[in-house]
Amino acid sequence: MSNQTTNAAADLRNIKWGHEIPCEHYCDQPYIVITDSGEWVCVLTTGEGVEGEWGQHVVSTISTDQGQTWSELIDIEPADGPEASWVMPLILPSGRIYAFYTYNGQNRREVISDNGSYISRVDTLGDLMFKYSDDSGRSWSKEHYQVPIRNMQIDRDNPYEGEVQFFWGVGKPMIHEGAVYMGLAKVGSFGNGFMASSEGIFVKSSNLLSESDPARIEWETLPDGDKGIHAPLGKVADEHNLVGLSDGSLYCTYRTIEGHNGQAYSRDGGHTWTSPQYAEYSPGGRKIKHPRAANFVRKFSNGNYILWFHNHGKDNRATPPLAYLDRNPAWMCGGVEINGHIHWSQPEIVLYDDEPKTRISYPDFIEDRGKYFISETQKTVARVHEVDPALLEAMWSQHTNSQLAERGLVFEASQAELGGALALLPQLPNLAAGGGFTVDMRLFAGSRDQVGMLLDTRGRDGKGIAVTLTERATVRLTLNDGRSEASWESDDGLIQPNAWQHVSIIVDGGPNIITFVVNGELGDGGKQRQFGWGRFSPHLQDVNGSGQVLLGAGWSGTIGALRLYDRHLLTSEAVGNYRAGLSL
Image (tube, rainbow, N blue to C red; front, side, top):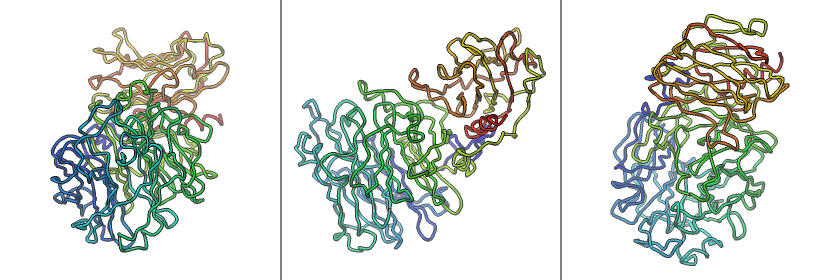
């Protein structure tokens, strides 16, 4: 995957370059397991209509070439039966594949909402059922089997007093210390935002790995007690998924409508969990921002982790439907385990679409023969994408990286050369062609009043780039191609007086996004903004200005160092530049 290319046609972060997974029309949650023979078996929810319409069912398809081509769809449950949805696969060491799904076995055609009216969507209720395949997904057992789910208070409080269970699941079951765990979200009511209240549980089997008779598999519902894993403040907490840590602990993430994803740890096999809290980059650190969308955690064979999320958020408890928006681009953090907790890197863009309204979600993460892949869906198109291992390694090593980035460095100046200087500037790539660049600098402002122009390449026609320190202690980037102009600022108040600050301004012409990395942290908007990153028009073209750059003219602070790159740096590289500067 070419994450740093200046050629848009080769930027495999763009989802259009992925390989499509077959579907009927609607398609969701394409999850993949790999057989001993190297075949990929993908299960997904599909249907000829849209999400939730009659005919929604679960299928499998097989690839023998790492997702480049796929077989015809194979029914796990037929389209003319009751709704079967949200299928999750598990492959055993024996080769047997289990497929778990929500099944409207009573064939209900409507359900009471939280205001007493009826809704016709009936794909998030019924029984948790499973079938199995002993021939690598080519056929599935005729019988389906039920996983019993213990009722809790949220079930007894629903309109049917628990006689009908509302729930669904995402992701894949996980094997941990000889047992199988699977995350589910219990729904308390349907209404504004569809699932109006929810909380998370796990079903666990201690004998599935050893029991060949599916009717004799034993299940328990966790956590203990009468309440699942809930949101810190609101009524919505769903799509819980988890990983196992090396010390035997469990870690789960889940979505809320409060502008952040949630997290919880269990130190006793899932029986009890830490109190609800928002996910953090490190224990006690900055909270991660995320809307109401899938945020998946996964562990790789090297013992490191990734977190998939969307890197923005606001409290939408008053307007739940708005929380579903803005799932493009998709971001990931790399996680390393330290003293029983996962510490997350600053995030990187992993996938995007040219249309900002596209929703990229419900991924799976595949590790196969030394390569990494992601599957994802936009609800009518599902694809598989290969991921550059260097991107993952950069995130996993970000916590210790203190190297200056060298590739693409086209201009560099130190403090002695910078005070009000005028210098020749190399040409920057055309943004409309997918190019990008990075301005990387160290600043010292003696007071809040020291505002002004830090860098300016614009000619009399306004064409070029400019970097300004504002009165709100932000750094503003302005881009002008002679036809149109765009600008974005760092988060408020990050530039502190009487201290050296490191600022990387990354302009990425793939997704057309500007990010700021200030003192090793990628801006997330803080308390003032939903977004810390900003988009610029895909029609913005050549922002080369006068051919010269004026540095710090009229500004009474100090520019200690300036580097200009003719490519977008990875966030991880900007963090490395910051750490390298600490030793100067």
